Image (cartoon, rainbow, N blue to C red; front, side):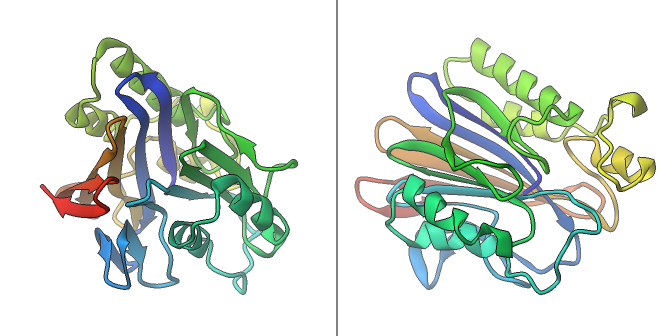
Amino acid sequence: MCLAIFAQNVLPEWPLIVVANRDELHLRPTEAAQPWSDAPDLLAGRDLQAGGTWLGITTAGRVALLTNYREPGGRDLQAPSRGLLAEQYLRQKQPAAQYLQALEQQGASYNGFNLLAGDQSGLWYYSNREPGAPSKVSDGVTGVSNATLNTPWPKLLRTKRSVSEHLAEARQPAPARLFEIFQDTSRAADHELPDTGVGIDREKLLGSPFIQNERYGTRCTTIILKHRDGYALFYEKRYNALGQAVGDQNWRIDFMTARIASF
């Protein structure tokens, strides 16, 4: 997961809205979002290479979202899979704040990551590349990419502004409009791009909200809409190496009955 915007308590009926793009190698084996056979209360995509997930939700209302921290040359090939951090949180009942506080003690053993964990207490954030303890994410529209929370990369600022404008105009979130915002392939000017050590050509490639490239690019867009009446809607749209939509799935998660159903 490489670009995510989340809105907390912006719309009265929708206390949590998450929209995210997962950018990854197109050849990396992945399972589309669905209830897991070994954890039917968990709805998420699945990384079939290293295990774990980048984004998921449970029938108890737990939400996890993971992005990698970009640090070229700093990757430890022997480090455990970061995707397991999101999976482990979703499988447990430990409160979000406690889970992240415990993770802080072992965070150094992982490559750089940002992890957001949500439960009934709200949304919590921890990065092993930012000093300090896990913190609660404030209400409003917030975002993360492959740096720490709210680092003002152009693509993050652009999508954050567009989502904010949409929610300010709408009485309820429109999935079609949110998908459109996250399919933006326009790139920032060279002087606006961050310098993360990957070179200007790759900064350009990675500088748009939606990355279109035959080797590495946006694999899916996911939307989670939590409603105050005890359910959530989950939308996933998947793309091929040409940036074309090749599949989609919609799910409803009912927290009252602990059921997940497609629609």
